[in-house]
Length: 225
Image (tube, rainbow, N blue to C red; front, side, top):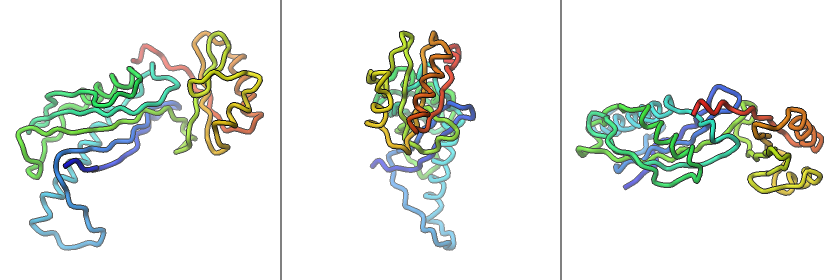
C-alpha cells in the first residue's frame, strides 16, 4: 500500500531557484506517531527506524536539487519512480508522470543520480529491492514570494507578451493580469535573451502602476544545464 511519508519544500539560495514539494512513497505502512511522549517499546523501534530513513532519503534528494536553466519562467510537477537495493544503490529510475517540460523531467532523474547512493533501507522495509515514488515540483521563486501564487509574464523577442503562456495585448496588460490574478499573487516578469533592458523596464513599470506585486527574473546562464 502506498502511503504519503513526508513533505518538504526545497528552496535555492539565489533570487530565482527551485522549490520542490516531495512526498516519499514506498510499499509499506508505517503507524503515525502519537504526539504525546510515551516510553519507547520494542514494537515502536521498526516504525521509528523507517520514519528516520524516510527523512534521510528526502534530505539526500534535497541536497541534490537544482533548477534547470532551460526551465526559465516555467513551473512543473514530475513524478519519478525508482528502485534501490538493500545497500541503497540506485538500480533504475523513470518518469512516471511527465511535467510536460523536458528540462524538469530530465532534472528530476538527474537529482536521483546525484543523490545516489541512498541510505540503506532499515529492517522495517522488507524485500531485496525497494521501489519508491517521488513527485517533485519545480517552481521559480523569488525570495520575497514565500508561498504566493505565481504568474509568469514573458516579454518575447518581438516585444509581444504572454501571461502564463497566453498572448496578451500590451495596451490591455493591466486588465489581463487582473482577470487572471489576485492582488495577493505575484507576477514573475521574464524576457527573451534579445529583449532590450529598457523594454523590460517599461513592462515592469506597467505592472507596478497597476498595483501588482512583481519580481523581474534575470535570465539564467543556459550553460548551467
